[in-house]
Length: 169
Image (cartoon, rainbow, N blue to C red; front, side, top):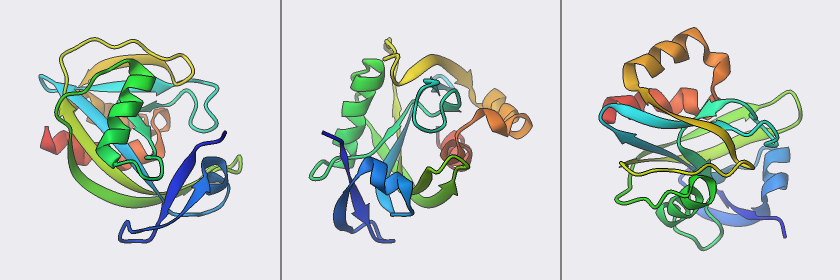
């Protein structure tokens, strides 16, 4: 059964549910989250699996996904950290949210109310190959420089939210 996402208005109020593929086939604003785990001035990034339905092979934040209907956003973040990287997260904190729209040339649309979540993490991880092909701890300043010089290596939402995260950690 295909996962459903929470369709929201511009104030993040739920107004319905929709299959994830349907939400990404046309512009339907829906709830999402982006998790950034950090330690000692470094951020844990993942390189999305090449076979992902969009942004395959691009670098992004530690974990990103959608809460299920009836699921709290921080609860969903913990669930996906485990599913994608076998990470059991400690304290997570939502630091801000934003709405973004991006239309890919291959027919996928991202129109998301994205909750940005951070947390400190000092443990290990194990990648789920269906989700990520690589992960790396990257120094904040090195990351910002590479984002300026090579933006094509990163997901669109990451380019929007990472600079604010770097200021906060």
